[in-house]
Structure formats: structure tokens, C-alpha cells
Image 1 (cartoon, helix red, strand yellow):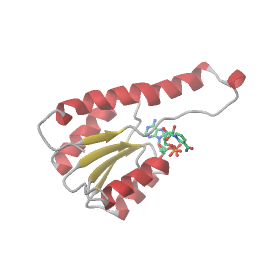
Image 2 (image 1 turned 90 degrees about the vertical axis):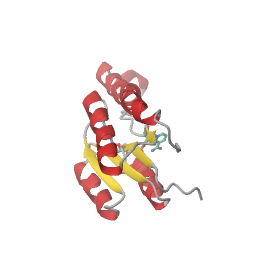
Image 3 (image 1 turned 180 degrees about the vertical axis):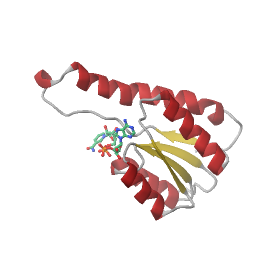
Length: 133
Ligand SMILES: NC(=O)c1ccc[n+]([C@@H]2O[C@H](COP(=O)([O-])OP(=O)(O)OC[C@H]3O[C@@H](n4cnc5c(N)ncnc54)[C@H](O)[C@@H]3O)[C@@H](O)[C@H]2O)c1
């Protein structure tokens, strides 16, 4: 099992579901995690499982300001950022003929634009010389 001591990772949708499991796995291997999620209750519960290693930011990943806040939190609380897991992607599973523009926009705003915002926000920290994940 890879030792991740000294790493700091942002996990979008990191409070529950697959992202929640990623948060737990990373911290069990020694990493610090900033979990970004809309689900406040799940976020607080996740922090309670390992308060020294997990920080929670409640926010919508489609907002650029949330990506910037997450990076600032990683640096202020854990000293650096070494990786981002762009896990969250909101989508509505429907038959093709029932999909609306609003459904499509939600998917694009979270899955594509959210990922772009997080990678742009993280890049200045990720390019600093260090041992990346
Ligand atoms: N579950 C599956 O079978 C499956 C299969 C293939 C791919 N995926 C992908 O894996 C990822 C996680 O899947 P999951 O089933 O754990 O998802 P999920 O629907 O359980 O959501 C995971 C977390 O993301 C958070 N989230 C949703 N929209 C958000 C937003 N706009 N901002 C911040 N947080 C938000 C939710 O609150 C939740 O805690 C998604 O990208 C999904 O598309 C899932």
C-alpha cells in the first residue's frame, strides 16, 4: 500500500459516496484531505472520523470561487497542495428523450467546468517543487 504521508489532496464530492470512500482511503494512507461537497451533514460526519487529517469545505464545485477557497484552505491548514481528485459530477440519469437543457447544463457545469476551475486554481500550488502524489 502506497504511503501518502505528507501529501495534501483536494477531493471534490469528498464527503459521501465514492468521493467519501476516496477521502477515507487517502487519510488511512497518511494524506491530508480537503473534502469539498454540497452535503454539509456528510461533510461534518466525515471530518469527525479523522479531524486531524480531514478539512471540509461546503460549496458547489461549479463555482470558481469554491475552487479557489479549497486551494487556500489546503495551504493554510495543511501547508501545501499535492493533488486534486475531481470526483464529483452531478448528473440526472434519464432516458435520452426526457433530458432537458437544464439537465445537460448541470452535468457540464459540474463535470467539465468544475474540473477546469479546480485544476486552474490548483496549478500554481501543484507546480511548486515537491514530491507530488
Ligand atoms: N456510482 C456509480 O455507479 C458511478 C459509476 C461511474 C462513474 N461514477 C462517477 O463517480 C463520481 C462519484 O459518484 P457517486 O456515485 O459517489 O456520486 P454521488 O451522487 O453519490 O455524489 C458524490 C458526492 O458529490 C457531492 N456533489 C454533487 N454535486 C456537487 C456539487 N455541485 N458540488 C459539490 N459537491 C457535489 C454529493 O453531495 C455527494 O456527497 C461521479 O463523478 C460519478 O459520475 C459513478
